[in-house]
Image (cartoon, rainbow, N blue to C red; front, top):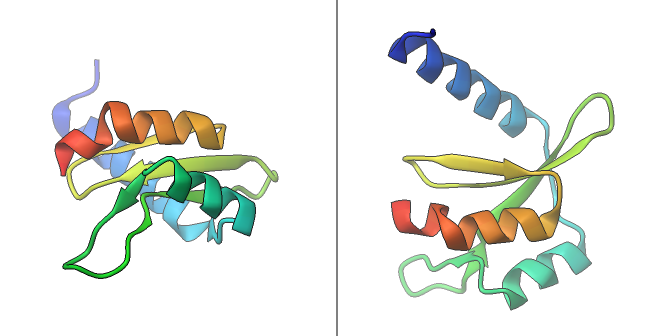
Length: 92
């Protein structure tokens, strides 16, 4: 069994890897995220998408949603939106 520190370091590294391969959402993907209200509101400014995507070297796309406390991934945009509403939003 992994220790807490090993688990935390592993997750941090996986998240960093996703961040390093971050790419822009397509206009259609962005519209889907915004229409589903999977957004962050920043100090009265316009809302921004709470889901982003990462494309690995193998071409595999992963959709990510996160706060400073937690993150979650999904292979589909709809899956990441559901994870935002079901869990990530509550960690903000």
